[in-house]
Amino acid sequence: MTDYRQLMLLLIEKRPYREIVARQGCSQRTIAKVRRVLDEQLLVSIEQVEALTLEDVDGLFSDGRKSVAGGFVPVNIDQVVQARLGRKRSSPVEWCNRFVILQGCGASFRCGRRCWRGDRSRRRSAAQ
Image 1 (tube, helix red, strand yellow):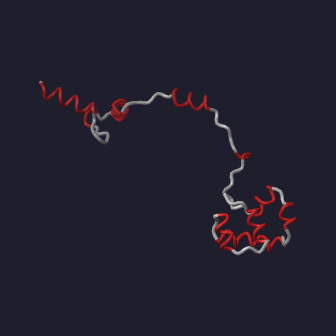
Image 2 (cartoon, rainbow, N blue to C red; image 1 turned 180 degrees about the horizontal axis):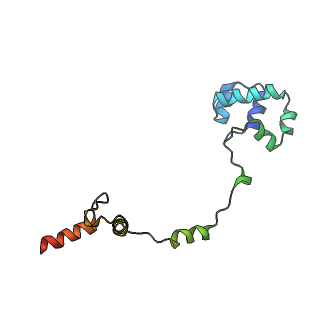
Image 3 (tube, rainbow, N blue to C red; image 1 turned 90 degrees about the vertical axis):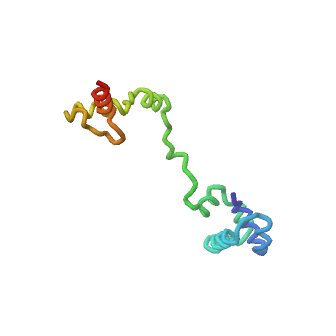
């Protein structure tokens, strides 16, 4: 993570961009952004930069990616586990049988891959 306070101090000391890049390992674009903020906020002395709090520095260089802990909604794990374990899942055969009963189409129903109920009735009739 970029130490913006250190970048501001180096820029106020009139250090060249290449030296700052070599020391801090940041891009020239980041240094230009810090220079713009220094010019906009009229920060010209080391004392002014050192007087800034951590929240002030974060506010000057906020990019919108920092998450806010106040917006966090705690998850009730017990409730989630109960909801996942409490529901009964139906098998494809049960879904097919339920649909066949509701539609009243008998063994001719095809449920996508194959109709187990229809296949069984055809196998029985073919075996006899």
